[in-house]
Amino acid sequence: MILSGIHAYYEPDELVGKTLIAITNLPPRKMMGTDSCGMLLSAVNNKKDSEDEELHLLMVDNHIPAGAKLY
Picture 1 (cartoon, rainbow, N blue to C red):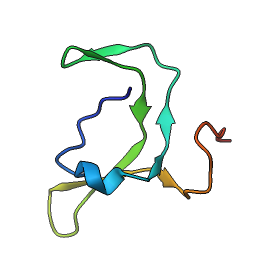
Picture 2: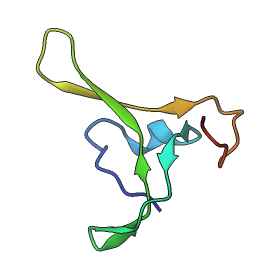
Picture 3: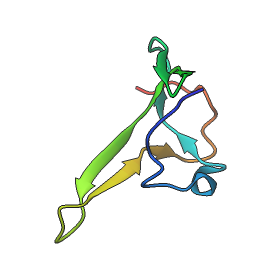
Picture 4: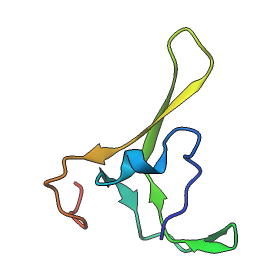
């Protein structure tokens, strides 16, 4: 399981069926009393004409299977 603080940027139903890029060979880290065993990759930039940040999770086409290696 991977826990992440992305709720301010994404609703759970926006991610259903999406294929995200994650780092999964990290040691577990306790978050809210639960082990998080990885990290989602994302990019952050400032919104145009604002100091507010936008978070963009890195996603791949749905035809790429889970566990595919990145090079």
